[in-house]
Length: 200
Image (tube, rainbow, N blue to C red; front, side):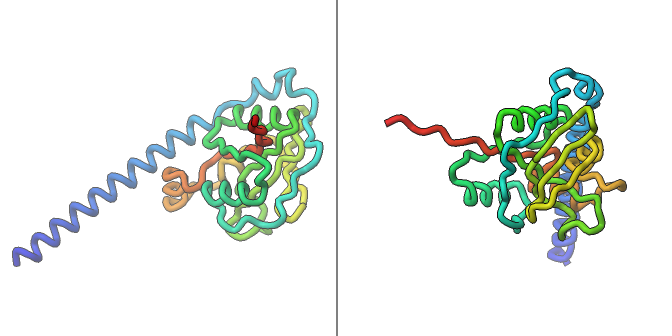
């Protein structure tokens, strides 16, 4: 009887700990969501972005990346492009994301973004890694080149919604936990910078 009582109490304690941990992670992610969803109106009207930014040569991914997690993408990009140093920038505010993309394009640095596809014909899992090919803020256009070479144009706000993985409804608990645990993150880009040659 004592063993059964101890088992029940242990199970209740574990359940409470799991519930508190889950609630904490969901609250953390909700706070991140508020911070990253900043107002881009000042950026849209900034003279810096009046000239469209176009990738000189669009990086070819060479097919799908199987494991669409931050760590999986990072490892795969490092394997496919050893000549580059791959850096991840995650949970960026909308304005930071657009600014980094623009600066990378104008500087000739390849930049990739993981986004949720809003189209029903999306690849499995509803997400894909796209190479940013063009940004034209005054014309409300962001163009990504997908893993199969297809070019997908987005309106700027539509692109940001996809980069935040907002599909129109509330994100399910499991997905929120993946974001909170940073298995995958919103407003995330992978910047490929050419490796500096070491002297000697």
